[in-house]
Length: 482
Ligand code: SF4
Ligand code: FE
Image 1 (cartoon, protein in one colour):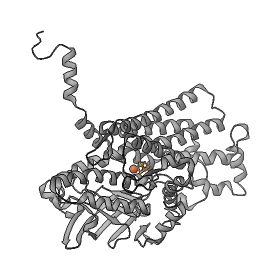
Image 2: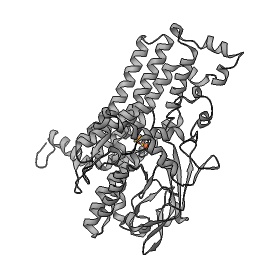
Image 3: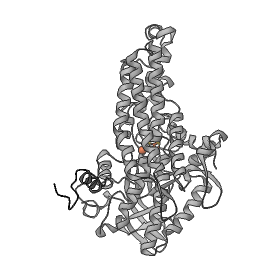
Image 4: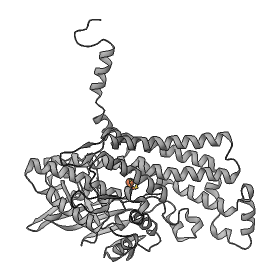
């Protein structure tokens, strides 16, 4: 397994084309806008080195019998699924943000199950290829990024009817040694600091969309790949003093990028779906369910930090024992633990798959994520309520250090029991970043927007069975007369 230091070095060595704020950047490890995200991802390596966390952070490969980082493991049991959620909560508690490595992991688990089914039906060799690729990922301890979301153009039209055929990533050429793909993937978490990009289709596909039914692995330094790093609210704070940054080491949210595939060649050995359009939807659903499972893990860990920050702010303000503050803190805890309960339950209710892996209960996984789109907003609202107006109006670190106004800021921002102004300001910045627009939008749209979750719930809810239950109790069974 790689150490955190080795991970950073391995990312530094990649010769990729990354653009940030209109400039091509050579080193994302030390660039102030990307460094926090690299640090958060590096923690997935660092904690695996720590004997105290090895049970959660590592696993035994079912392919090689070797010890591997859990982020490269194929879940073998419900126990593995539960450990996944606990590990994500641990990392959320330590970073206060997204550590990005789950997306590619979920893509590999989804492909493991779906390629097996494709081979059964079509006699293809995808499962074997994927297994060989997995051994490489596990042995080299690589970070993979899961690339699903296409730009989608006119949402009312399928991929093959778009005026611009590149609105969904597709195969544009077939050669003896592989395929060439073109298109783009948007909102890609952790893309600029991953070793591999795992491409999957984004939606259900029909026969006429066959060229869009493609799944493959692309090294992030493959020729033709371009990364454009996204902006986040207040990202220029990272260019200022530590106090203004809120979470200087790990930042906020995952560091999303647009990934452009400008005629990228992929050798056959790395192609895991090619034209079997009827498997696009199962792949999307399997990936989405594994990814939705996560949200009661990572977000609950992040919520633990936020609840702690709100409680600390109340203490700094001298109101921590007021009954209304205690009520609000308790409510935040209940909202967070509800998310966790859903993620644990969809894991415990997992089931073995034909490929020999273990799959979450999709209905409960959808519920976990749909709760996240509401509960995190409510948790943030309560954090704002407790924190007070300094959340939005605090002066900068430069003002605090200014010879004339600095002493006034220190005097008037002081809290209860001589809590220094700087402590309150630092905490306010942490809460501001953790509850800001980018963090909230991620809770809303990451792993699927609410409507996608509702469609999943409607599909899995089995309303007919529920109607039968009601009929039986109301004496409406067939043959029974009123
Ligand atoms: Fe992992 Fe997604 Fe949570 Fe980020 S938001 S830590 S990628 S599950
Ligand atoms: Fe996400």
